[in-house]
Image (cartoon, rainbow, N blue to C red; front, side, top):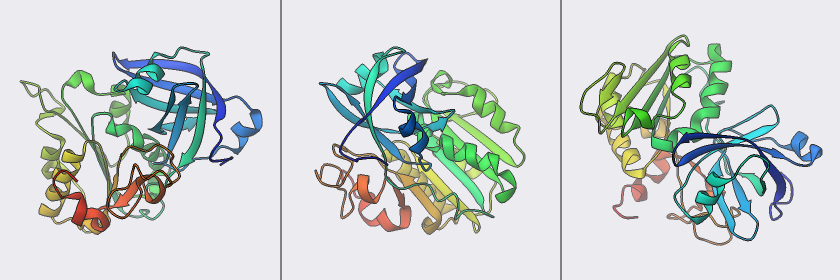
Length: 276
C-alpha cells in the first residue's frame, strides 16, 4: 500500500448498472507503477474519494486485468454520486485496508458462505479464488438471500457456480409469493437446514445485514457448528480507515483496524446486544 493518507488517482474504465440503484464500477489506477504495486486480500476494502465531496469505504469485489471492481448501492450523498459516475470520470482511491477472509487456513475443510442483499460483494473474490484452487478444499456451499428474485446480482455467475464440482448453491427470496426452482421462500437463514456440509469440519463466512448475521449465528449453533469456525464481515461508519477517528469503534475493536473480518466467537458477547 502507498501513503495511507494520500488518495491515488483512479479513473472509471467501465460501468455496469446491476439494478436501478446498484452499479459495478471498474476502476484503474492512473499511474502504471501503482497498478503494478496494488495487491489486495479477499475481504479488504478501499476508501473511494470524490474530489470536493468526501470518501466512503467500499468492499473490493475483485481485481482483474489491472482493474478494481467495486459494487456500490446508491444510499447516501457520496454513494449516489459514485453510482452516477460515467466512464472516464476521475476519483481518488486509498487502500486496501483491513484484514481478510481465512481462506488459506480453511484448506481441507468444507466452506460455507452465507450472504444477503449486496452483502455478497465482499465474498465474490474469495469464492473465485477457492474455485480456482478447488482441489484444496472440500465441499463448497453458497447461500444467498434477497427480497425478490430480480434483486439477485450476477445471476449468471451463480448458475456457473452450480456447475462447479461439489458446490451447492442455495437461493432464497423473502418477498416472493411462490416458490420457483431453484429458489426457496423466506430468509437466507431458512437455507441452513438444507445445506449439506460437515458441521465438524467447516469454515463459515458471512456478510450482509446484521439482523441476518445474528439469525445465522443462532441457526448455525442449532445445527452444531462452532462459532469458533465462523467469520463475519462487519460495516460501520469508517471515516479515516486508520483507526484514528473512532467512528467505527464497536466494543473494544475498531472495525477498520482490527476488521472488517472477525471471528464470530470473539465478538458474540457484544454483537448480540440489541442496538449495539
